[in-house]
Length: 469
Length: 169
Image (cartoon, rainbow over the protein chains, first blue to last red):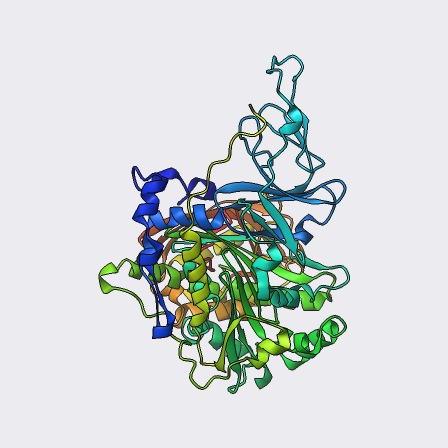
């Protein structure tokens, strides 16, 4: 059995021997791994970007621990004192709603000896007691007790009030989606999300008055391949007819009417929002016209005409670097990507649903979700095996750069502005649209541009020990 | 189906036979062990300690409400179009500890067992072990041996490695 403890997988031993921060930065030159000469029709990512442990170490340090990452959804911490635990890069994080209802993102590590204060995935607790020496924090992270402080002969300057759980540098929400950054030097979340926000709205606006919920039932899986395979694949419609042929056979055999199958004249396209975020869409979904009509009737009161139309399209959204939402209309899935090493990635997936939807619709949604998105389903396992075979193939460094980023580069004959962008109110997004066999790959580019930009940053300074002098 | 539940020994033998069919990849024989209206269920875990309880309102790893859905999976595995079985992993199920539990309805025999499954993937040359408990409910058929009316698979290690399918559990 390989490890079932993800936290033990990412260790210093996986870094090259003797590679300190400076050495590592010198060894990995992002400029050498990305060939972005789009004006000349060239865009390529070096195979080493997928196979190098030095690149992985740098990605954790300068991407996952330096920029905004998704950490959870408000519905998971709906009531006072609700909490969930997660990871930002390598670092354990506690997302908690305090007794007054305010949300906090805190490092889940006791200020005394570093123990994880909250070892469970989720719960409801007004106080968190460290099991090691009994230090107590409240649900806002404030230190409420240093056990036996009065007789402990602490230095005179010792101040327990300064020893609350350390907040993450930045913590904010957009429409219920919670994000954290371990580094303060990031733009406001709204600015970071930019034009991807109308597509998060399309998810959030499917909520009933009771809101959205993450359907109970945790699904976590790993694949033995680089996380960027997942980033690309969720935006890649080119693979669908090949990798998922057995799934498509099944859909065809189940289809009771031709309406449940995509129309041959369907449209497909993508938007790239900058900062690595992108969306791939298709003007159809594998649902019956009855279900589509029912969904549209439900959303009509809270969505504009344009939004209503887009809510009926299949949409795959990537918020760089760790969150993807796929809305197939028949079901909605949110996944969180966590690289464990250059060749191992952990995925967490959730079924998102409007609270209180009719029982039969909920059951149908769940079956659709399980069939496609589960690692025990009928489509995602094929993706996972593809990633693993790609990882094996990416070792062929002698074969040179891949040609996997070229579809969608030629813009001849396309209008200057996208009619789709206009109706959605998008301002500066890159776009492309075409027939349903377009299979755009240019929507991967922004992720690599952001990846390279973040990797080129100077190493972060280690903060001084505040409150311990 | 008849009104008389299969004997404990017959029922337990069927549980073992099912595991052997899976290991030998005798898919049609495996399917034939199930009733047409069978329930095959691998629930997900709600949290560290509790399984989901309602497959219509909560997430399962696999939920099949009829043999037809299992047939779909078999067709996918044998159709040569899914990469997950090119090549198919080799599996060795070990099923032990047959114990009778109260059945959910008359005419059924409920058997609880513990299982481990060693899975060798010739593609990656990796070995993994999955383990948990089974709860089978079996009914008698007029034509022959007992059939599986329901199977619940409790998967203890739910941190799935890449692929989980009917042969994995």
